Length: 570
Image 1 (cartoon, rainbow, N blue to C red):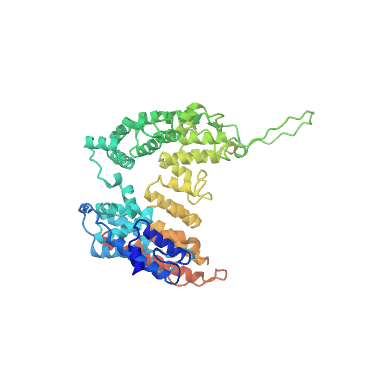
Image 2: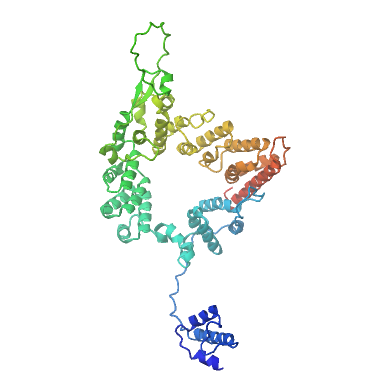
């Protein structure tokens, strides 16, 4: 009792910390308050801790009651059908297994189907069950690619929850205006107040929303405060003008070419070059035309290799026999890259300093051609069509640089005719065309074509070249894949299986097929579920792995069909 009363009478300040320190050091090295060294010291420490615990609990004053949160807003959208709600719970409950190893098993990957399910639910305008909102926010917290679709589907109640849980604050940052309702386009007073007083995220959301509805009003709003904005903010605001970009934006963008921020100037120049009728595009066309011309003096062979200089002999030589007639000359594109990057070029967005490993002249030349309107070249090169221009030989090894710049221009200007010319025929030995030097560039060129034409080109590419280089190209095709494209993919997978290779080399394409193949193709794949006879040179066990992969593909397709039926989108 003596030890207990001594501990109770001890000062409150720092008492608990002192007991914790004694427990960590041990009572042999430090005795507890009111006790001496010896075998009783541990008991005294525990008695003191018990008394201090009671003191701490009993001495806690009640806090002021917090303000009751406002009720969650109503969601006017229709609820999910019961079967679809159960499906959502299954998709959210699935968790990816540990990484590593090439074998995925035959079960579908439900988390990879969640984005597709969300897209279908959003198309139908359904509201989620309230009890599913925490799991939806947790899923979006772990996968940033899910956030736009999750927040659209979760609706206003998810933002209400996000204000109450620190783990879900990302939803407020991702939602337009931090989850606050944006003013109506006709409410000029609220628009001005939010633009002048709002947080940066709110101002970006306001400008983007206004730009999508009233492009001119958004531009005028930005112009009113442009001179007082920070450089990094000006860059973000300027990027919003990509939506609804048109000739009316040219005067504002021309002014931005004189901005003190290099990044702002570069973005303004890029936007102006996407307007073929702009003054900047005309200036770039004049510069680019000065670098490119038709040369009628070179033979086709000479056009592909640099010319060497011959030194005249200093001693007389014997008369030579008459030479054979030279080959007829063919029109050749000659290139003379700029010798300097003058201030006018820099003002129009040309970056003067070349990256490491690039020659300055070729670097400047590529930027000029990239920014010049593609219509320039038919006029400059004898009225030829894009396909005829791309087929012309280019002198002195400038072909790859010129064609690569045309590729970038076709993507920037969304010119389908030039994209077709640069892509070439999908069955050609250099499938992708002479200017598309990478799969990423081919994919960008395909993005300028319509969905049907894009799928047809990729199907032809796969039929001619297989799947080894098709992953990026398939990624730009509209889902679900068209019938010919889907059949081309399945046929190529079947050929790879018959060759006896492991399916792991095609796991990326197989995963895309699970998400993108039309579910109606499932019945046609039943014949591929059996374990095939393995050829002599096949990898051991490859047939079993392929059967498992095709079984997962068929199961996933049928699951996607069931999902669509449950949501009423079949």
